[in-house]
Amino acid sequence: MRRAQFRWRRLRVQLKPGAVAATLGALAAGLLGAGTAAAQEAPLHVPNAYNDTASEPGTLTADTAILVYQEDNDRVRAIEAEASLTWNDANGSVFSGKFTYDSLTGATPNGAIRSVKPQRFQPPSQPADAETGASGTYITPARELPVDRGFKDHREAVDIGATLPVAEGLKLSVGGALSNETDYTSHSVRIGLAKDLNQKNTTLSLGFNYERDRSAPFTGVPQPLGDMGSQLIGRARLKQVYSLIAGVTQVLTPNWLVQLNYSYGHSAGYHTDPYKLISLVDGFTGDPFFSIYEKRPSERNRHSIYAGSKLALGSYVTDASVRWYRDSWNISAWTVSLSEHVPVGRSLYLEPEVRWYHQTAADFFRPYLLIEDALPDHASADSRLGRFGAWTLGVKGGAKLTSRIELYGAAERYWQYGRHFDRSLPGNLATTDLFAGSKSFSLIAGVRMKFH
Image (cartoon, rainbow, N blue to C red; front, side, top):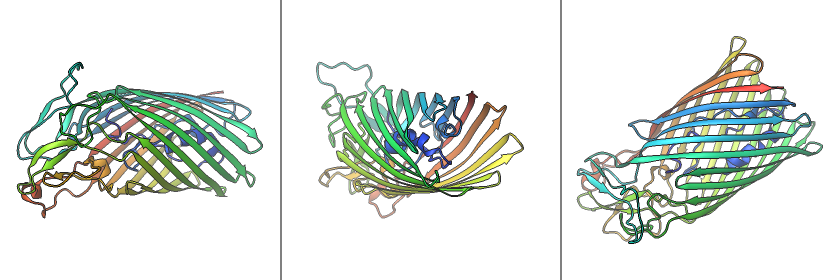
């Protein structure tokens, strides 16, 4: 899978009294192990049983949901099905398991810029003794954004976790996850501690996550910064990710809860996207002459600070959060989110939400390279590493059919904005749209059942 082409997975920090220990395993898996190209959160999240179990001992919760994600202009389309079971033991232990299946199709930008002439793209060449089932060659018409329309993949993922009381006010969370795609495999393990203080009005949490990823591109591993179509240099590459999170949750009043988290991540290994290209452009005419493969640094350090507040006024709940992010690639980002839980009658609710995101560009981001210049040590034209902003508008809703059965759903519209043209550039570059940002729409439908 050309990973992180869509943004519909995220972990929202649940600011619910007593729920921090139960959610710590999920925090380590999602908040720590995130492999996003930048820092942004995905717009939709399938509600999971971690969020409701802390105050319901002796309950088995089954949760199933389906998500449909579609980018504009017939780009990436994803369909995800998820099923989870969570058992909340009477002694405070929580055991969970989740299975996810994704199917992805569509077209994804390859990194090259638009041209006034048709462009031909081809994968790395195979060694003489190698066999391949498809050439991967395609042609992009003049003035269109170069996209690979052969994008197709699927993913199966399994996650298991347990939260155990080990002492008075102290809980241990452990878990592991496996994700498998045609060209990408990820294994991770996590461990965390949560300590209640001040009559359970204060909770301190600490978590660690280790992830090992193996990238095995369909076409093999190309030579970084090598010419498009040049011979591949291998079949697979590895990456390791170490993540740490520390946080505090504080009950300020019976109706007001706040949370503050700091997370650090270090990854080492293969960060390059083997499918991404960079256009080599004539500095006089502004026309792309050829394409080369991108190359990213082999290490990345991430820092982020999250602050959230949940305030209940009667049956209405206001959820606000802000997240700051910075990494060693010189990407800085801010995410601001606001939602309101609105009861409708006795059994229905709605949650309108708005979210704003903005990031700076990585220091090696280049929308193109000039053919007369020497090649840099690292370069990528991946729009996810460029400077852009994004807005998300959405609404979630649910209906409790009985005390044990709840139907829920969500819809969100997401769009990126950025600089499209630079009139100071030479030749045709001055009238070339250099922004490859996306717009998308997402839908979720699910059912949650509880058994005592």
